[in-house]
Image (cartoon, rainbow, N blue to C red; front, side, top):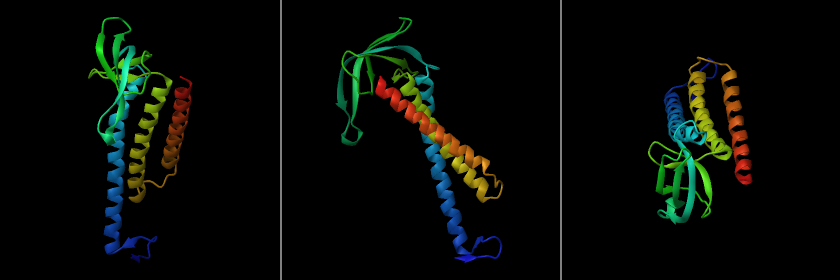
Length: 179
């Protein structure tokens, strides 16, 4: 690797490798951000009761389902909307719950169910903020390396968002332990 006399910039064949490595990093950050946000934002809106049909899920029974690596607990039961207009006698939710428990849920647009409350909201908020931090890191990396910004404010904002995500995770964990 040769360093040029201008600000320690990389020149020659090593520059191409460095650019390729940064491009792979940025692509991975953006892919991770996209996947995280596509998964978390809809469930965040349901957990906050901003979307979907609110109701109560009464657990009939729970069992372990799925192949070895995809094993999870699925509970069967009855969903009844808060307004009484919607009843699903064959409702299922992928949660580890106790038979006979009645838990508040939100029915989604594809007729699945999402837990609601502080713990659920904070969990999905944490994931949404994590996806936002991944996207912001990709953007700030490109802006910094191309010389479009040398501002530390963007990096400080990303650290603040990561801090809020950690605080949200802590609040969600405490709320989940108390319920």
